[in-house]
Amino acid sequence: MMDPRAIAHVLSHVHDYTKSDQSRYNIGRVLGHGLLFVEGDQHKQQRRIMSPAFGPTQIRALTHIFVDKSLQLRDYWLALIPQDGPGGVPSATSTADLPRATIDVLSWLNKTTLDVIGLAGFNYSFNALSPTQTSNELNDALRSMVGSIGGGVLATLQLMIPMFRIIPTKAGRRFSTAQATFRRIGTQMLATRKAALRTVDQEDSGDNEFGQTGVKGRDLLTLLVKANMANDVKEDARMSDEDVLAQVPTFLIAGHETTSTAVTWALYALAVYPEVQAVLRAALPPPPTEGITMEFLQDLPELDRVVREVMRLHAPVSMTKRIATRADVIPTASEWEDKNGVRRSGVPVAAGDEIVIPILALNRSIEIWGPDAHEFKPDRWKNIPGKAHSIPGIWGNSMAFGGGSRACIGYRFSVIEMKALLYVLVRALEFSLAVPPESVRKRPGLVTRPYIDGKMDQGPQMPLYVSAIRRDED
Ligand code: HEM
Image (cartoon, rainbow, N blue to C red; front, side):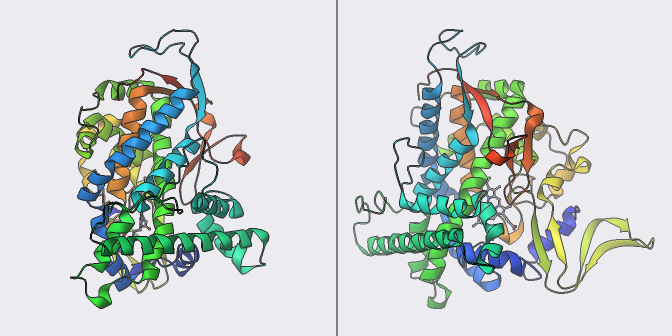
């Protein structure tokens, strides 16, 4: 279904169009009954309590985490680049013949966004980026979940059923152990939050054996617990501990690979279009003396256009689905002719019909964006075509974060995280493709990740040449 009006109708009538039982079963088994799973009034209730945690005030307070992790990643990448080589000292104007490293940016970005969601979501240090990190229980559990099934964390969701419904396997048992770890650590996190919120001094409870660096009261889970405990929330409108716990794997899984994949596609696009990369770099001012804030990142128009264009052309979630719960006629923006030659202004559906919301196809629609819709052109955002205003997405004339009341709750979080990463990385480093462009493949899954032709069995990756532009003052 490619008609913006029809899509808006489906996404806004959440009682008439729900997730399928199959996909809810999958999500429920892995994530419990968190925001991605619940429907109807329960969804409304959870969403209402959780929304403030994802609002601008909160994202402003979390921006330093995005920036610190971006700087850490930049420094690890700089350290991988040989110091000597042709070209001598790197300069801001020329990187020709500079020493360079070949880096799989996807795997590094995955670690970075995992660290970010750990700290921002739960004040939990995964330390996934750190090369000295030996073991971390929650990270091990997450990896073991992935390893048990094969593919990415999100692919895990899709493949759950056969593993559990057929014969119990070793992999299945590993998966159950991982779930138990999530539960135990999540329960502990929850108890720590509640205890801290009950004490007068909520500032810091110190390090503990669960890798938490103290309850500072700013992470998403603390805010959620706080909102749920607030006096003005009616007793029957509160989320149960079980529901709160279910948000831990929900945030971890919904919030980390999506963002790392988006930034990976951004670096890919900038590598394929070096002139766009140069324009972006030239437009990025030095960091302000008071530090990189959310407002600073929001006020960089060239960066904004690049992020919007990446999310349009390389939306990591390429489609979603709904099931009609009753018969309906979905109104369309334009008339169409059915197979009997009858002109119609709506699509009749029956209960049980599946409706595909083609996120990527709509983002790339030639009818909306013009004949160059398939090209990476951030400048198009200087002059948005009129038809793009009809796209019912929650963010930026784009379907990348979905639309309606089930749109991505984390979109502000993700956009600022992406901007922090791109600002820091593009200022300090130059990126070019380490493989022929035609060998990069998109593999559809719940998240569309890059693979290299002939190396599909190695899993998703994005090898880029990375050279230093300058040793940043920031
Ligand atoms: C580039 C990054 C991201 C993309 C492309 C993305 C995309 C999406 C999309 C398309 C949906 C709607 C799915 C549907 O309609 O079936 C969604 C929902 C959701 N996202 Fe994101 N997301 C991103 C980042 C995040 C982050 C950082 C978080 C949390 C920290 C998050 C948490 C969620 C949750 C909880 C939902 C379910 C919302 C509901 O049903 O009410 N996402 N996301």
